Length: 553
Ligand SMILES: Nc1nc2c(c(=O)[nH]1)N[C@H]1C(S)=C(S)[C@@H](COP(=O)(O)O)O[C@H]1N2
Ligand SMILES: [Mo]
Image 1 (cartoon, rainbow, N blue to C red):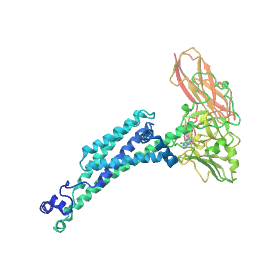
Image 2: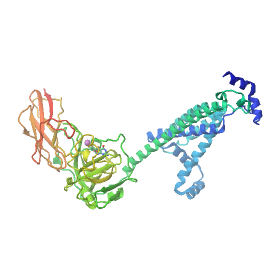
Image 3: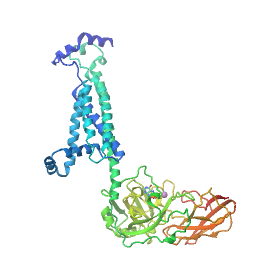
Image 4: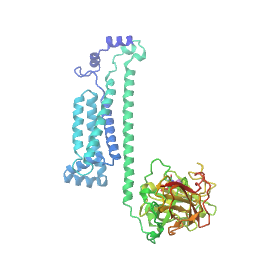
């Protein structure tokens, strides 16, 4: 250490060095190289822009860059605007945003260079001026106005912060490499040479710059992804669904059993249960969407969204349910689905005789398969509509499978991208290796929706007990109720609608004062009555009678 200091002091004073290297002796003795200033400015700008874009994309505000670009368009003379449109055509937006970005980059490089060379005041004034002008640009022209202003100022703050950090890391780069050979020959250890120290500083500066640039890239990528998600939601609002060949007409009023507290026969979309393996709901634009029917088929079929909508459409009221529903649980819902018939589509494809499984594959990698012989004429659909609107994004927009009579995990693939005809021996759907049965017909079940377990009701007054029962694709024949372990009594049933839907039931009685236990059980049209054996879900659906306890007082 002392050796090196001796060398520096005795041999390499800074003025000597400057003179030897031919620089003007009147200049600042050591300056941070210009490239470091450029990088500082560019990285700071990228971080600031990415931050502003990210914030605005999260809050669904307009992009500040686009807002500023729009203001530029407002300000330039019409003749220039016309010239730009005629010259650049549909790329005029890209050229405009590119122009704004390049202008910002030049300013940032200049500010960065001043900053690293110690002209912090000049750099701050320059950045401040650009921020004031930029943040005023979105005001008063519709768009996100004040929100964009806030975003630009926040982005500016981030840019300034990054610039300070990088300027700080750039400062050591000002140390000069000694010019005279004496240093190298001064028999000092290599580590005493300032050159490696500059190398280390340079590396540190570049690492910080790289981290900043990486963060900016991640932020920019994230914000553009968020915007594309929002774009799918708004695209969906513009979808015009075709009419079904035959309209079903309204669900008859008689399906309702008229007991308060029993859920609506058709479940509103916003109340419909949801089961997704994906952490983030896939957003699939119809622009990029196709569905391929392949595997053990004679003819592969590939459909885009338009071609799918051009196919004959049918409407069907179908209840779907989740196998992991607990007794009394609410993982079940009924909707009026609009879609094209799966059996017709597969007939066009031509299923090979060796096939025994139809697998739906989702864009998110989820798969679900059911036996080919399920397609016995029932209304299995490639669905595009749910209760009169395009499938909600969470329920599989733009297309999903709906197959009455089997649980969702083996059939109801959302964000459908492929239908593969295969065999059970060759392929297992997503949940099968995870311990669930490969075949999963819906188990006959009933649920008491009202009253709720633990309720207190009026003694001696008529109490409406009610709920739903389901045995999809067979249909419900009977629901019975047992009070306090007494005999099974027939409940009243809502009008039969379709075998593919649940059925409402109700039972009225006058409870005596005291505690009561109410059980329900359903019988399907095959004559099967729900077993009392209590089994939790897995590897197939739960069984047992839903039982509630209440107090009359
Ligand atoms: N892509 C995909 N499709 C899927 C699932 C899933 O996790 N991912 N879950 C399935 C299960 S287990 C059920 S019960 C139904 C639920 O459909 P819903 O969320 O529209 O109610 O979707 C099925 N389709
Ligand atoms: Mo499920």
